[in-house]
Length: 189
Image (tube, rainbow, N blue to C red; front, side):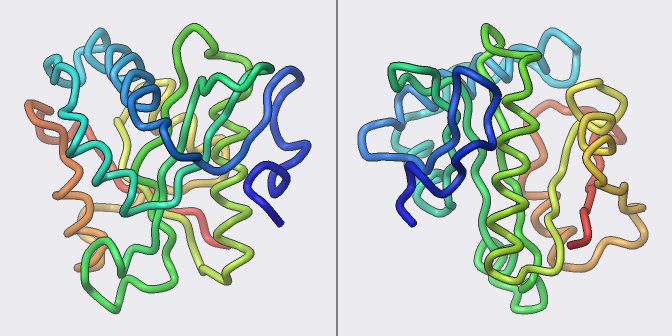
């Protein structure tokens, strides 16, 4: 199944979900920056500015990237995920598919694209027999913890984090985010 057909019918009307294609990194970086502004405006962390394109490309290449596009082909959102063991170097993390990013251009927000991207990530994890999908997110924000809780993700208490989950959680901690403002969540498959 090719990247343009694998997730057919999963997106809201007027959009589709597919895998990333060559030449999209700059557009995805702009979407990431626009989504970050929502977290900045909510006071979750200070404005990080536009990420360096080379570092952002390296981030994308280390993951599978799912893209939401509108009719005409322009990317308007993306999700990036990979096996936790591959991201941490800890074989004990195998079986958990880690969602490192889920971003939707705010101009296309509140249309179900975040849910569609998340469903594509979960479907991909199921296809390859992962036991769970994990992520770290902002606590107490409607587009953070409560969004994922509405999609069957459960908060993992800090004391219950496995070494692989803790390592990834610490690696993804945004610069300037206050302690206690993030959480790890897992959805069992």
